[in-house]
Image (cartoon, rainbow, N blue to C red; front, side):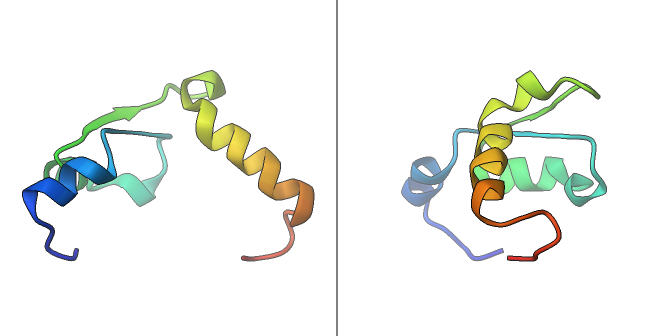
Length: 69
């Protein structure tokens, strides 16, 4: 991960909410590097991740699921 100044860390992220996927297996390390709170949503609780769900919905209007981007 790129080294950031303390000021830059605060400007980027305040909190992260993810699902239970393996891509966030090192969530404690990510949280510590970014000085951000990290939350893991409960299974089948999409409302706990509102922004990502809404963003995915908007993206999929223009890029169907079978396409990579």
